[in-house]
Image 1 (cartoon, rainbow, N blue to C red):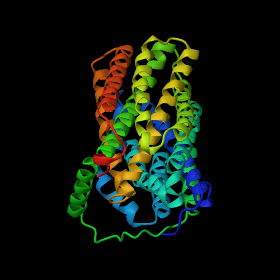
Image 2 (cartoon, rainbow, N blue to C red):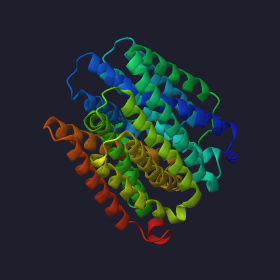
Image 3 (cartoon, rainbow, N blue to C red):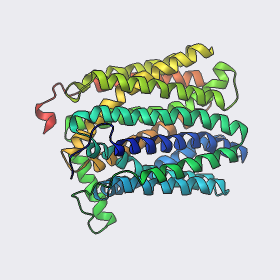
Length: 400
């Protein structure tokens, strides 16, 4: 494999552009899809179910997409994944069942994720890996920021127009992905077998979990993304109760504030957290839970925006070093793509569990402020346990 280029190489710039457009489409699509199922008179609990269709594709495809990302040039995988997302969004424009279309977008996202993170080690030197992760997370969050704002505003204007714009984003992302260098991996694609792929995935998962630092990264990121998925639905339900606003824009703007905060947190993590001292990021996870807990005491817009920004800053500071740590551990083992696929598997199991729990408490009628208190307490307690049980040194047993 050729020597990695600098942090701002043309390949890295193309990767960041693709990630921005793809993330923009993903996050705008959630608001458009939720508005679509409401317009078509699906039952109220269909929102979390829509997310479950998306998440289930990650879980089902996890044994296969990591091997694909490690065997094929990752730029090509990113191209094909965005074409699949394009097909899913287009199907929703053509009035195909939204659950099927959203699941198809999930299939593209599942294939895309191992490639977008795995390619960073091919485009940059190891000393730039945390900074590269900061850039990709910054690009992701910029996409979330603009996607949430555009998704909320466009769906208030026209659901069909929003879906067409999102389809165009995926098409543009696929076009730019053509410019990503096609670095040929040393791992060759063997004869495909579902059973062998599942067995290989299970063995790689077991090996990764035996490393304490990898286990820390997997647990931490799974908790984070599971909480993030539930928090998005919590905010959508909380806004009309606490702030007395019923449009699609305000929940989108609050989501955008979290995204803006993540950009700041990612920059701080890139500046102050190295892989050798990744434990410095963990207390920020506890503060995320505290922030969610405080939602129940907020009833004005300025405090709501401030609290969301603080949750975002803590999120970026917590997440970026753990992502970089897992990529480093994966690169030392069976491949970065496989490590990211395993990470996606655990993250989406967590998302499915926490979104299902949120749907259950909503179904039985628990007040949204009580849900925020309970969810914040659970998250702070879980992150506290993760911090207390972390590996104590950067060398030794956890590196084996």
